[in-house]
Image (cartoon, rainbow, N blue to C red; front, side, top):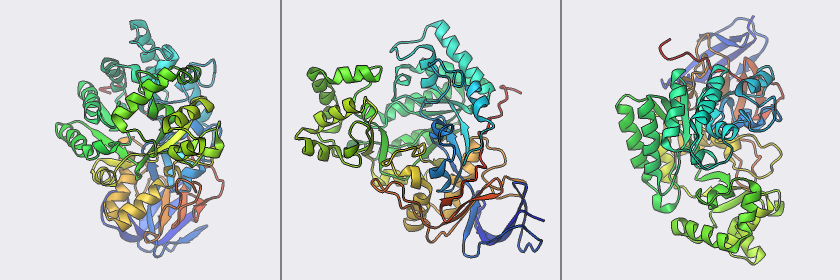
Length: 510
């Protein structure tokens, strides 16, 4: 007897081949039979007539790892069909920690604490470069000494040997932004010893996009590492269209034999901290208290404002305040609206918000073009992502946290036909499974894990927006994780069938 049979579904198996009709039988968490008419007994049967059956979606770039201890349900991920997330991105990970904490002292100690904790969705993680730097150097803006570099390498090897995918960079954020290219190469050489992977939020995604792409390509060529450009985009109007040149550079390098990918979320707004958006890295203070002190100086305010205006213009109307503990009444409003309410100019309002939030305010930045988003989505080596954690207790956040995959399938696949549905599913499933070496995932195939989405391809769509952020998607009938139904009609039932997945490394040449 089977545990579950999915009857009469239109299967898109993740490989990119045309859809076909069949039944799928599941037992002990695995797909055990695929056939045109399975009549054996089963504990449960799902009638999938008129519905599309695919592998569970894989979030190529997430920050779910930072919530896995306190918010293990991963509700916002599993309720949009994400059965596995790739965490630890943008250089930021819980471990190794610069704080005196036994759980997060090393990547291995963190793994020991989480590996047997049931989760609402699977997670596999990088170790972050910023975490390494903070653990060894702190926030100092300088090159590491030889002994400090060796200490970072030791922590990196420890992470690789305890299940990290590889190393992620967040070269726009402190303290990762203080590293030069030589430091990046030296650390990536360690990852290469384990045949690991490297991802990068590159140093600039706007006016210096091309130079930033060239830097990461240099790291890739020097080390011959498998690599992923994180949430690839071009920000601010004067730079729109640059993704054509940046992707051409990546394609040319792939043609030379290098293994390179990118990921992308299907929105025109990015999301990050207000500090990282407004304050140039050369002026960025080291911790929240120093930032507050700096912004209390009118001369420093003028200098920060001058640098920002020289590149991006004198309006902050493109910035929507998402999270701000100091001024929760302003959440969901644009900075120019807040400024008008306060009788201030945009910049003074923004600086006061940073001070009031102790430098922790989050924003959504409407700075990308629809044409660029579509261009990156079309790229044959682009994967789909949320670039998000989970909501935790926040009420306002970027809707990609809730809707990236339904939005991609509803707007860009069904409505705009940017990508054919078979290729779209490959971008959501088998491609990231192959890139991140998720054995047994990403494909409807006998012997593979029964992580499956069942949805109405004519209805699936995101419903969350920048104000009504928590709205569930439409058209997602079932999500199956580890062979069990965990979501029905986009509502999670509370079953935790996910886990923290360890990356199985092997030394170069083994």
